[in-house]
Length: 423
Image 1 (cartoon, rainbow, N blue to C red):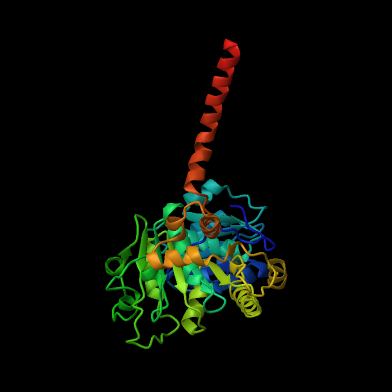
Image 2: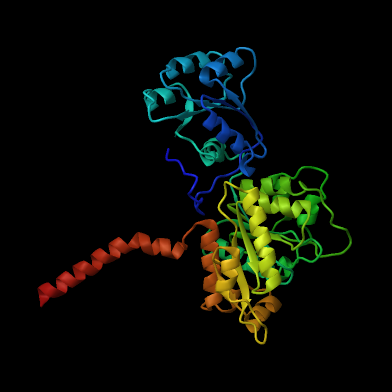
């Protein structure tokens, strides 16, 4: 029940799955809580929820539901010097079965938590509450259900065309699946010129175009048939890479596809093309984590700055977008120093990837990932670090080593002790 304060940035492992299409009514006792609740209604993770805010606390809620059906979720703020348990008992008499209840409490509450649970309260949040507390509490009511979205959506986009964002996206996704052990899918959103099929040495006859042009809402069974298998844990939703169609889409064209993939995949990596349309902007804003790939020149620096500012404004309750610098040290090319680039962006890149035309060229021509060409190359380790940062997951090998280290230390201690005794 700990709350995250305004001055704290959400961490990579502080993942909040978006809520499904639900109705939420919040009954507040204070103006501060009402303000936080209205701000929560604007958060991207509650975009599908219909959230309304009312004053009057639990008394107003009981009075309202004497005359109207209850929503999917009721959020109630406790009040000082009021018998909240009695109010819950009254509310229970008019509350529809299946309605979930969240209580926003304060340090002065005297009602035992077990009594709240006994009366059907699903969650209790210690106040004073912030925007993210309300978002997290509502979303967590549904994130454990198999019927709603739980997968993490990661968007990778280039600050400029030709900076290698697709190559970074494909290598990071491959690393997430192989080294972090997460069931993952790459969705190539560059329908006309996408390279994911080439990079993974796949030539599927179906892919993202079949889903986006389908007249029916795609379900999990349909999406599974469109996926190409690239490994034990990695799948691909490939772009057709043909010019038979003009790929103009509305802002919400890919929403149903992303929602469906969230139900079955732990991690969805979006390879977002460098273009500015309603749907690319929506894909970036709606992602759980964003990685901008840039080269160290003036245009990339300007575009990265603009994209970072826009995304921070549009996602006030998320951690800021991340960026990496690619193709560092290209011969005979003037470059902006990393420290000067970072000073302008006002944050450090999470990685710098050196220019290596032989390594990346060999991988691209062979349809392989960098780690497949040279497993010990420092760029392969860089992709692992990026994958860990984006997912908030340590390497499985590190986890196993950490788990076994106490046992290994004891064995070493016993052997050392035995040798000393023998001496």
